[in-house]
Image (cartoon, rainbow, N blue to C red):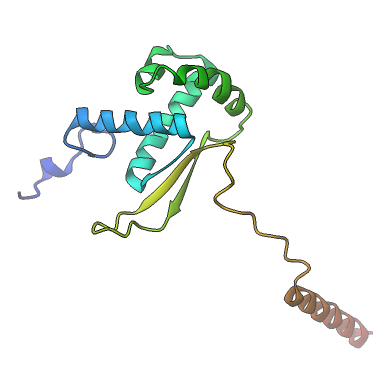
Length: 163
């Protein structure tokens, strides 16, 4: 196939081309979003996680603000038993969030033949241990103590030499 100008122009297309067609793409996104609501943390490829994140943010925003019809939210989450979890668990927890409702972390590439770039998508405030641990305060480390002492000595010597 030759790359011609009409092929390169998007003409209003939105989103990545994943799966076998638009119906396959929608079904895949629904399944991943349903898994995200059920398990609150999923591991998938980076492209899929980035695409699902858009819909997860929209669904969370719809549930918390009640500004749009909720049937569109329920059409994305496929299983009926998750409706209770959406309203009783996720809405109170995510309602207090000031930033986005999801987090996306890159993890090492898949070791199989395709070496796909992998990611973890999670809802904020989930009960799992954090993936990224906070850096401990390193003021007390030996190197920082030595550097602090060196700076104090240098400032004292400059002040004594300047008098």
